[in-house]
Length: 189
Image (cartoon, rainbow, N blue to C red; front, side):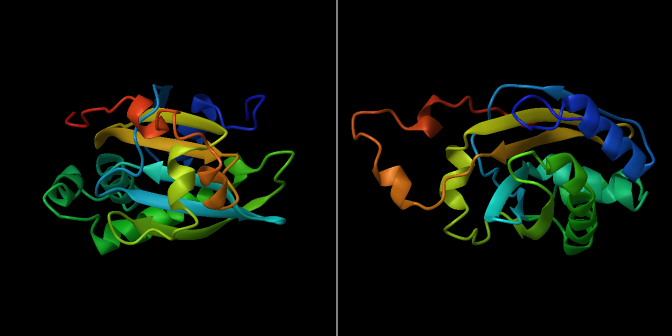
């Protein structure tokens, strides 16, 4: 189920994750967060005529919890991930599967069907074509997602991405940076 802008609804995200993980998941909207998340994960999706059709960004907390929940590993497995500098490889593989399963939520009438392109752990090198799109999407949906028994974190869906970094140069020098205007959220749950 998508909203008027083609964004998935919080209810649709929760339903898909509940089905995929086999454990209850809730999702609620929240204010915009600064992206990319430190030690998080960024997934990119392409559409038939758009090599960067959509982006989904996860904070570290949600990335490890979704990865652990998919394998139905113990809660301690998710908590151990909190001690790592990046999402552990085994949990990143599981998150890749979760991201691939979300393609059905991300298609819009203007994009058509989308497919998962890649999953990047941060702060590892995010491709230059992706970076400007994290702070300046035309449409975005920011969610707090709670996976029962594993904990919660945030994820963001981004659409209407800029075609290339040169479009960012067209903005006025006097305009405040969007990143400065976004709400920074303390993610210690």
